[in-house]
Length: 378
Image (cartoon, rainbow, N blue to C red; front, top):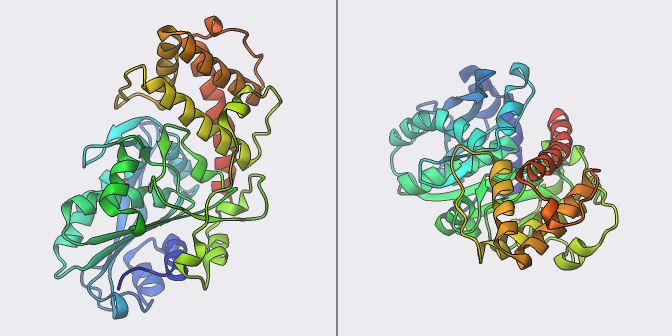
């Protein structure tokens, strides 16, 4: 079959949270008509989650063979964050450095670490199957991020069609030739079904230069109760309600316009960081300024460094490069300082690498406080 419907994909992304063992896989999940009732090869996936301080293994997803309309297809389905295991999932989300994926792109180190811990089991499962037509990668929240990495790996290593379905997923990698661009070019836009509520804070992280795949075409943008950040907007049951009974083409709609980036940066009014409007405008503004910078300053993102450090170094280099670029950096930094309640500097000469790190760290903490509450409501 060509694709999984919005209703089925959302139900699977929700029900995978219930699977913690082979017994639960057989009792709670596999009875769905989309899955083969024969248990040959169907299995749960266990991932390594957390950080160096708190590292643990936990049930994270399933591999299953399709049946009926999906005979010949495979499903890789991943759960989102929970606060089990003393918050190990949250530590994974907070690891916003970059590491190299198995296909050679830079991606979020925490998400990549989780996928790499399951990659061997996924590869074994796929190698045991015969005549595979399509592999469907599905996930909500953190599971959506891992589904991105799974789809990327599968598309480079398996001779099958690959389709990616995510709900409220965070950003995984960079645009401009990076992970998000490569996933878009490999899977193609029409095979990527990225669903998100406009005021769900989780798809807003990590901040630019992280971006979503697909990098072109319209996303499946789902309005949900206004523009103020809503923690309930991240809950999978509410995503099910938003897509239930609809076809994919009924869910395609453009993102609301955020207006002129230049005018927003030059506006000295206070900003409300509790709205999705602010974070969307900020993301567009950072993209706008960084794209201006990279036309004059060479940029290389380095695996192992945090994005905060890399952005601070880049903006400082732009200030040292010349007056035009330093003017854009000054506008951006002043806007960020107002947003996080810091005293605004007067000139670009006042900007240091240490100040930039402080501003970005405060900004990240502000956004991640919203995200943590949203995850706590899953």
